[in-house]
Picture 1 (cartoon, rainbow, N blue to C red):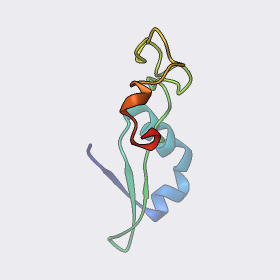
Picture 2: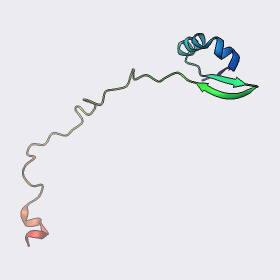
Picture 3: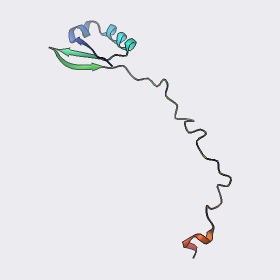
Picture 4: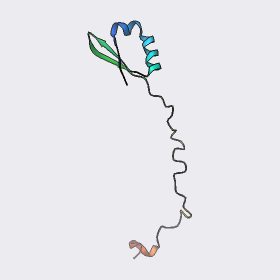
Length: 81
């Protein structure tokens, strides 16, 4: 991503135009004062293209036949000996 550099004076006079150009081109804008960077304006990342959290794990869970019975025989448990 390239950065466009503008002076504080130009930023003050053309703020809305610079914001529109930044959103259109998706390029950050660095504001300078006396030749030194003092602020950086970057486009906001939108949620477009992101998957919703609801339903994100759909079809990823294994299906078990019997989820109530123990995984092993009770005779194998040390606590019952």
